[in-house]
Length: 101
Image (cartoon, rainbow, N blue to C red; front, side, top):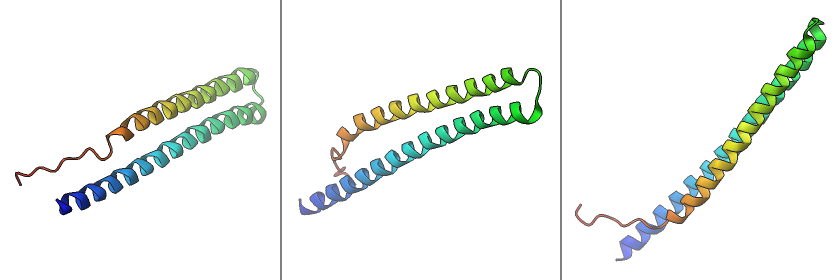
């Protein structure tokens, strides 16, 4: 019985560490979405200023719309993944080893 307790504690620790790694990966993914949306916003402003086209404002607005779309998709995915991760935390420690090994 003592070995099962050690096994369960080890598995619980591994599961907690995996949850923490996943949580940090979700945060990094949100930052990547934010960075990409900022790149699109800056690209729109730069193209409008640099090229001085007659339809430059439309191009800038299109890039801003794409930037906002990417940003809100990133926020949606962030909150959706956080909710899924929070719901999966309740399964930690419910491991039962197979005695038929």
